[in-house]
Length: 375
Image 1 (tube, rainbow, N blue to C red):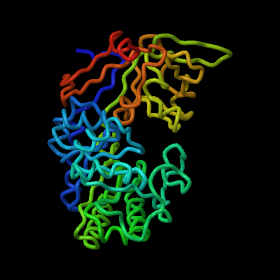
Image 2: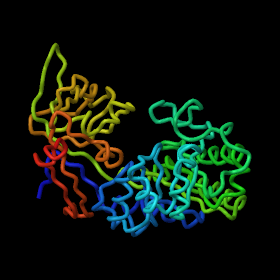
Image 3: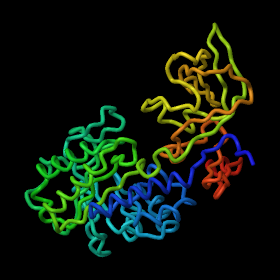
Image 4: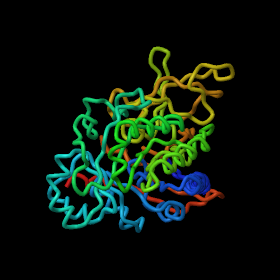
């Protein structure tokens, strides 16, 4: 049976392959690795993920409730700022709860002390290998975490953990540097903590990643601080290259010798990182650069009315026709969680398929989903 168009398709066997590697790293290094919902929140896949991971982390009240309901575990929680009306319930859900600032930690002290919540503080070690400002949280003038000069000599009463997050699809060497930078700046705190959260961005499932180097760095950290529980919370690593976005060519526009394939998806609605990062997604069977054997050039156009809802030229081996299928590779992470219904553009189905291509789970979207967001 052919799959619908458009559709985000998650391949269960590839997801399990990633999860097995992540689980092996956690066991070898003696650390905890959990799922960050900001990258992937398709909860019908949570039972599969929960076979390999001990938990998940939330950056909002909604994510925390989703974890509790569909993952069956108490979430780790960090948000840049908390809303007063929902804080008590959120703190009661959390296994660990991290504050972004010392002022918020003190503002809510009566609540988290009353609930007995294990609380942490996000700190900024002022190191990141990420060059794109949109994804780099380590700016010393930034809003994410306290820098060293802001911290008192002694940790605030009741503080149990330290949280750092400065990586994004980074390698094992970047994790090693982050650990050393955190030790150098905040070692006097780590000596008195119960846990350390190294955040996300550890892309251990990418081909060529130095998995053994990561394990060695984490083991050395545990030897230096044997009293600490170490947590990593990557998002992309679990979902890396486990799915694709399938779409259809609906029309072809030609202007002044430039041809654009009009698709039944939208880059601004369904693949925003392709415009925000920006990055060039892989299109199955096409080249992102001019190359021998790829003589047919097309821009790729989205469904929305936004003028910039397109990608620059890709090159194909055959001329395109209305009705052709296009496949954007590696579209499972940071896609469905960021997608919108701007312009009323129809949302792709979300599917998980088994190794034989049979649909295991499916979520479809219609007018009621769009209407329900507006009233």
